[in-house]
Each structure stands twice: as structure tokens, then as C-alpha cells.
Image 1 (cartoon, rainbow, N blue to C red):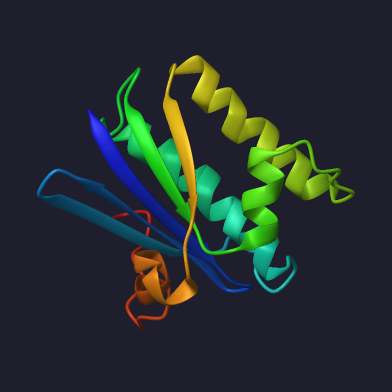
Image 2: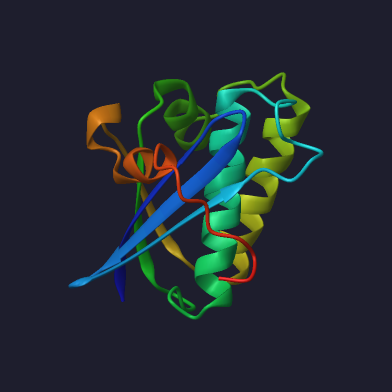
Length: 136
């Protein structure tokens, strides 16, 4: 199955959106206390990508060997995920490791695409006032 995946994050919360054919599923969450106001925006974007992929697999939207076009609105993040760019941030290194583990374990076919922030559908969700909780 083919999916388009958007994600975004800031110091307070994360959001993601998975588009599959005519279906769109979106989620947003406040950061857990260990992250809230303690990580940078780019670190939060990595958290959103990691959690969103993990969540998509967990609710069976994303299945083994699916094709996922991941749309990113941050050039540095895009370069970090698509090249061998040196990363000094251990937090980001760990998120990339976990993301790559999900990709390998589930045999996902990933394509990254750099987009403008105004085209990031998860950014629109991130900026809504309603926050979904783990009970949703």
C-alpha cells in the first residue's frame, strides 16, 4: 500500500498525518514531561516522525513492505535522513537509529521529499488548540 506521511513538532507538541488513498488519519500529542520545553524544534520533528511511524504501524495503517513517501519541511532534517551528513546531536542520532530500525524491521519502502512548511499538512494540525490524548 502507498502512504504519504507528514509530521511536525515544536517544543510543546508533535503531530503527524498519514494519507492513504482517500483516507487521512491525523494525530497530535503534547510532549511527555521529559521532552516538553526541553528539546529543540528539530529534535521534536524527529520525535514526531518516529512516534508517527510507530503509531501508524501499531494501528495497522502501515503494514510490512508498504511504500511511504515522507514529506519533510526542514532542509537539514531532509539532508540528515538522505545523506551521510555528520550529526553531532546524540538525541537526533538516536531518533534516526529508531526510525531506521522500524524501516528495516517492517521492510518499508521509504522515499523522502523536501516540501515547503506551508505545504506540511501536519503543521496545520500542530497549530490547532485541541490535543488528542493517549485515551483517544
